[in-house]
Amino acid sequence: MAPGILADFQMIFHRDPAARNWLEVLLCYPGLQALVFYRIAHWLQGWKIPLIPRLMSHLARFFTGIEIHPGAQIGIGVCIDHGMGVVIGETAIVGDFALIYQGVTLGGTGKETGKRHPTLGANVVVGAGAKVLGNIQIGDRVRIGAGSVVVRNVPSDCTVVGVPGRIVYRAGVRVDPLEHGRLPDAEAQVIRSLVTRIEALEQQLQTLRSPGA
Image (tube, rainbow, N blue to C red):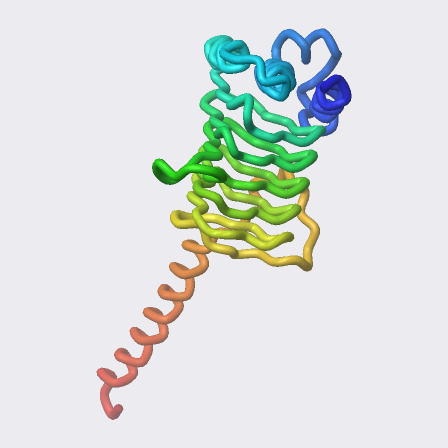
């Protein structure tokens, strides 16, 4: 438990350029506070202690706006940035050094039993407002764009955007996990191709209408 909390604390200074000193991080970072509550609750649940782990989860949600079920499995060095509205379900698994932004849901898709929440690999980035739903596998170093809804497995080293989520980037180019502006815009690419096609058709039409054509 203690190594996980320490790694979470240290990772904030790597991820967030606004983090200036340890006291500010301890007092003003709800993502870290929620993870501390979670790690204690998860440890207590491992000892089969009833009620108290869920009560701690409820208190953490009240104070931080972040809900993490004590049954979830979260690796070390995880960073929940801003955090308001984050929900992590009971059977979710989050790999080491994941970066999760506000409004993210790692949830289920119904009333299934057993493993019903997603599994995230190491070094995954989940953008603000994204929803990752169901018992699906998200590979290592995957980037999920803000507002995306992911309901299918995603292999490692990919970028996923859209509703439903589509893979628009595969391994080949290293991207800074904080550079959200460098996410590919699949919709814009389609629109540009359509505009180019329309312009070409208009030119052909003008040619046909011109005298002597």
